[in-house]
Each structure stands twice: as C-alpha cells, then as structure tokens.
Length: 174
Image (cartoon, helix red, strand yellow):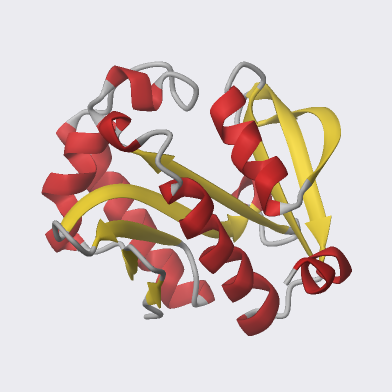
C-alpha cells in the first residue's frame, strides 16, 4: 500500500489500527454535515474501513488516513476512487478533516499529494471532485488545486458541485 508524505502529513492506507482516529473525526457533526448529514456510528466507521481495505486490494488505491507528523494523530482522510464508486467512471479525489484542523492548509497539502499520485502513478487522464453545494471550504481546496467548476450534477444521492482537471492542466500547474 502506498504511503504518501508531505511537509506536515503522512498519508497511510486506511487500516484497522486507524479506527479510533477515524471514528473521532467521523463522529463530529460538523465534519459529516455535508457528507451524510449526521455523525457516523462505530459500526459505520468499521464497515468503511473494511470497504476501503478491499478497494486497496482490488484497485491499488482508495482512502488514506492523514496523520499529522508532529502529533502522530489522524487529523483527516482522503481518497482517490472511482467517481460514484463505479470503475466505469473517471477518478475522483476527496478529503475530510477534523474540525480543529480546518483552515490550516492540510486539505490542500494532502490534495496535492493525492493528485500527484493519481496523475503520476495511476496515469489518470482527468480527476474529478464533488462537494455539497454549500461546502465552500472544500470548493476552495478544489479551486486551489487547479480544478475548474463544471456545474451541478447528481452524485452520492445529492446534487453536488462538480469540479475537474485534466492531466495537461496538472502538468502545467506543477
């Protein structure tokens, strides 16, 4: 499983020993507000870990835990996955952070590393991102990453703001 590193983070493939940190994050109502609308239960976090482990085996990519190197704590999670969880669709990038880590640049830092992985290692032609229309923080990270707004589309049982970038835009950016 691929470990990515940034100046302040270590991104490790989600595994069983990440449960406590992931549940701490996913149980925060503010974190889940635009994702599911409610905090996750321990059972849902465990089920997510099992799904993610299976995807790592099947595809060679999925969700990472963001571990802050200074504290060695899980402060977020992010992914490269198939949009809509369907292998026929292009790749999607996504992230979430503990509320106390919002606004500190961690999402952008992790997104840069994950996008590089998608374009350089997976040789993706494009990368998509979706967020709740009211999630301005996530949209800001998408814009900062160099993505372009595409419009509103239905994904994950909600009308989402869709952003994308192609490999040529990524190569120009880096």
